[in-house]
Amino acid sequence: MEIHIGDRITNVELVSKDDNKVVISIDDKVYDLDVVMAENGVCSILHNGKSFNAELKRSESGKSYIVNTLFNTFPVNIVDSQAKYLRNRKKDDSDEQQDRIFSPMPGKVAKVLVNEGDSVEAGQSVILIEAMKMQSEYKVKKDCKIKKILVQQGDTIDGDQTLITLE
Image 1 (cartoon, rainbow, N blue to C red):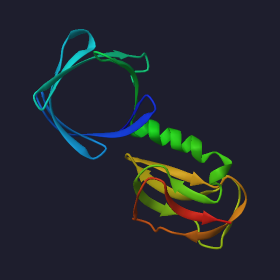
Image 2 (cartoon, rainbow, N blue to C red):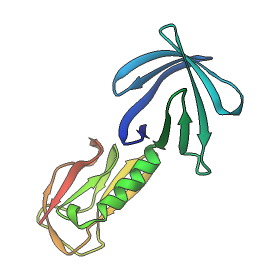
Image 3 (cartoon, rainbow, N blue to C red):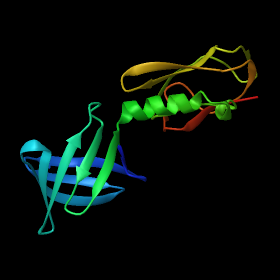
Image 4 (spheres, helix red, strand yellow):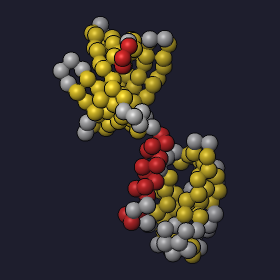
């Protein structure tokens, strides 16, 4: 998942968890931790024989925190897959992405609904993508022509991968 700490953006993955023993990956660097959650949002973290304490104050939305350490305070926002998907879909609505169709998250091509060279009208669906056990229809924003189809039914796709180019 993506985590924003102040102005820094980092990717965090839970590798394993066994009681208090936690292995996480932060920007592809692996950390073995012993994490104990005390009362009132205070947690104690042991890493390489050093102890760190942090107080977590959760916002009403549940995805934002204020983290207080001994010397610093950090705003922390958690951007899970669903939030990232929705944010990227909003970005997709801008004029800058009207020359291509792309999926903001990884998935699988369920069906391609057009052929290269087809003329399509604004709002017409051109491809179905399956992600997170849901199917999403991707539509063109304006009248255009299908220039190139870069995927086919059954293909596994990456986030932000161009699927269809438009002219």
